[in-house]
Image (cartoon, rainbow over all chains, first blue to last red; front, side):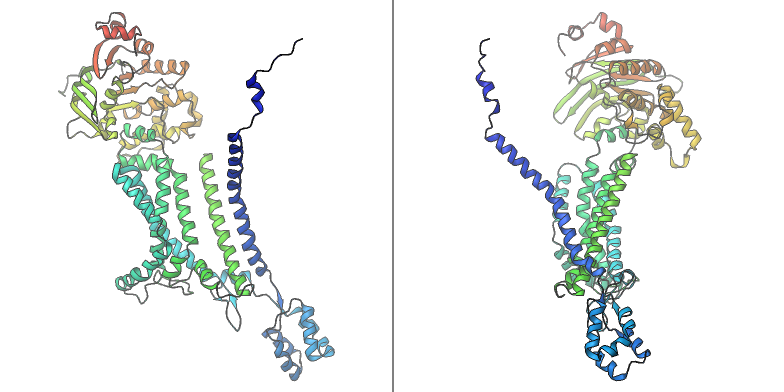
Length: 375
Length: 261
């Protein structure tokens, strides 16, 4: 059998030219960009957890007021008690360390008598989960006894975000419906650009508006002593969140196929009936996403709420009370807290809580959307 | 409309000219669509047959850049008169589109949609009445047995043929006089086409049906009268048999024989 000549084109089948390498390189780059989001999320989570979680379970041993009381009850001699006051408030990693220090002051025999109390009663946890969630007292720099109650901060954030959503949801949905369903041609394009411009205003500018315009306005309008309060921050935050919510909601409305509108209109539905009965239900998942994005924005916003809430720890009873938000607390205090101190770690614990809440909001959104899709 | 005298024509256009911006899509169209029969509109792409259809329920106006001259009389009433509300017109004139377009709601809600918007809020109907309306409409389009167990399912989950039948069924509860159909079978397979055509014959007499079709065989099979349009003009309008057997205009003859289009 004679050898068959391979045609020249077939011989070149394994050639890899520049395009091939570019293609491969782009694929790798895009892949890296794609997974970087996941890596960043994990990185942030690890960082915050590392700094904050240790604090939740942190335990010290120290001679606190109650311990002294117990020692006194057990009839510890006056001179020994006086000698021990030097150790008051000093923290030890283990009960044995504490015991050794006590032995150093009052002698091994003297200490042996009160060993039980020293070991079992000297546990001092700076952080208490119950206090964190139920106490409104946030006093991390207290000389006497630092407390880390975040209730007031949580209520502060929640009240401001809640009020902001009450303002932003109707506003942004209305704007999205107008831009998406009613405005045409130039008006529409002009409005879209304007809304996007509004979304780009830095939050510190909003905070400035809150401080210098809203503050005197609220004082004058409602005759209240202070204008930096829930109302101020809520309005500012609502106006801040509305543009981005409008943009997302308008995208959701635009994604509804026009044949649905045409079908409904051909059956004699008015514009409003078309929107209410066809467009809004069809865009439901996108609208929920827009609202949750706004909630997330409100929850995480720092600068504007720092400037507009009044930044005072308070359980608000009306919208005219000043409050303090979790984010603003972290921003204002982290710079002053010594790295690794209880205060520093407590701020990270707040961070973990914020992170968890945003995670839950997103998870809920996801589940809601899945539920809608399954139907 | 003079009481006691039944109009012969369900739809009548008088000197109808229509422009999309500066492009004239309809030129002096005069057509009389007789009541209770099926009339088909044929012609090559871009001849204005869909435009004519879409101006009869004024759905064309959605585009915003449409200008109309002349008159269209539906049941003896000029629908371009100033005091005519498109909402009321569309209650009389139902429309079926080229691509089945059920609303993204349940099958039941789709059937009740038109009824719901044309019933004043005070005249709310009971659940049993609503069930009756749904069943009647779906039976009329021969869909009831297929979907009666899944009325709560999304209408978009049905097959294309079923969707198109549903699109016809949802027009029936408001009892329109005229049904406009814009190539209702072009998205369907031959079996689906046959089923919808059969349905049209069933509905004949009860409604005046005006159907636009690309498919000449369909026009021949499924209509009583046939109108041929070309370049925005109405060329010929006769009984279907005459158009296909003895067309008067040479342009009609050429089109029917497949020389162009």
